[in-house]
Image (cartoon, rainbow, N blue to C red; front, side, top):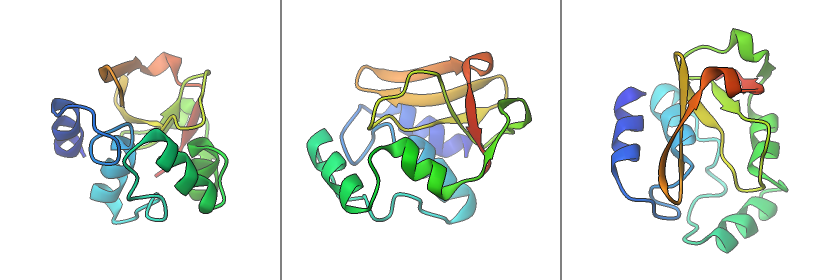
Length: 123
């Protein structure tokens, strides 16, 4: 997981290649489960939203809710997924790594203190 996260965070943001889906890449590396398989192939935010809707979801959070069991953030472990309290439709979860969670935005890597995670999902 850590190698996947480090590789993703080091590369520049690119829709569909190296974007906020880094949590799903880490899950795939850890488990072999590709939660966004039906959404892959996008190269813009508009295409990502179109593919997400075609797969039956109105947001990435809705896809996460359908794919992983929700748990208390206090019980989340390394490799689980987490969200802060403000969520936009294309916002992917962060991947929890001890006292922090990692995500990626257009501006680059995002480091979230564990205490800011308000929803968590077991991987």
